[in-house]
Image (cartoon, rainbow, N blue to C red; front, side):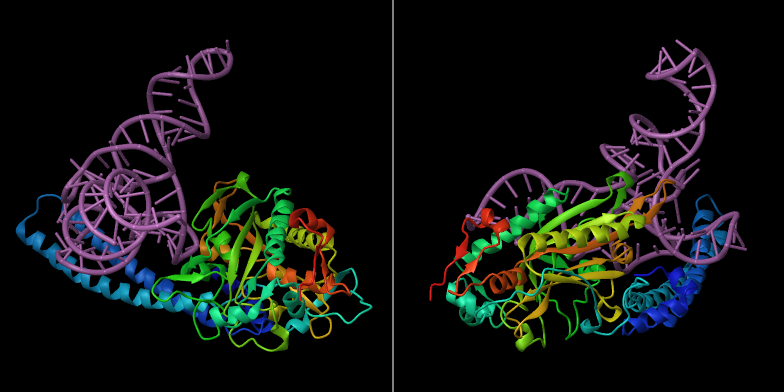
Length: 425
RNA sequence: GGAGUGGUGUCCGAGCGGUUUAAGGAGGCGGUCUUGAAAACCGUUGUACCGUAAGGUACCGGGGGUUCGAAUCCCCCCUACUCCGCCA
């Protein structure tokens, strides 16, 4: 959500930003509706003011005729107020809808572009893994190791679900705990969050829970959705709150299951664990002062890099282009790990960190009290610490050996309790 | 899930149709007094929106209704607590 005054004062920049993001939103309609709203409010408040005067005038003793005149005026006011309220409500609903479609402004240096292939590689750590044998993909590995079962999940739940088994379970737990330990050491407070959230919270974070293209599962008879990320529950945690300045920054690490409909996604690019309907994720979340969000965004990216570097997984960092940012993000960094089994070797997104500036804070009404005692919107950022499913893809495919076994990255061994997963089939 | 009782400003707490412009306390902030502090006393004290401003409007869990007028009456919902039921 952008400030209405900002939209009005920067209408050209807002229009250009919508175009840069290839989004469907109408900044001019927002300005027009905001004007209509102001006029409607003024008309309504005039009548309300008179109503209050009339009511106040009737407190004491009055001659019958005088009282009757006031009652008659009050009755007339009542009707016109009801009409004006109805008109205002209609305008506000229209404004809200149009306003909510306006995306956050993009960082001036974010690459302009339409799709993920327009993202700009800014850094590379490690090089694509080389094998002196023909490497398998994680699906074949997972089945041979007896740690992954897609076929039975298809029977029980449908496609794009999976069972983890045996060492696969321990690996997921190890990854989660590894991330939590790293983040707690940096002062992040650990959370295990609900896996569901109210529609209004999803919308506040910037998710669209409705429509055929929505990536969100909704519960049939409740105002609840399965969360696609703990960003939703961590960002909702402080919704409606005014936070004391000295409590900032607030740094959270939340574990949850993540659910995504992935409607229409199919084929080689989403084979196996890479694109699934459910996975486990440890998500970082930061609430901070506006002037500090740029620095915190770098910090979150640094943590993601450290986690993958310490695991020994080759990765690159991309600066996400405007068309691929998503409405709430001001700037977004993605880490893409090398996945040898993906189309014969390819970079695949494993983490993502976004600076959403005050876009989510406005929608969720999260503020802090500044030095003058005024309430101001704060900035909110999120970033993946570990998305277990994709981290497992990267580990299995990069750490496989000629005999079909998979080594555990040394940093994870203390968490797993074993050094290698042996082929069982 | 059933029954009962509540949800009021930063906090506690009164009010249960029109002198409430939300009493009274506590806390916070400013001041007087004091060498300083405490005490006492005086003043002040939220949020959002409309408006260049003056000012105005709304907000007593949320939504709707009754009324000339609602914190106050009615309906629905949410929520907390107590008891019962169920259950990991």
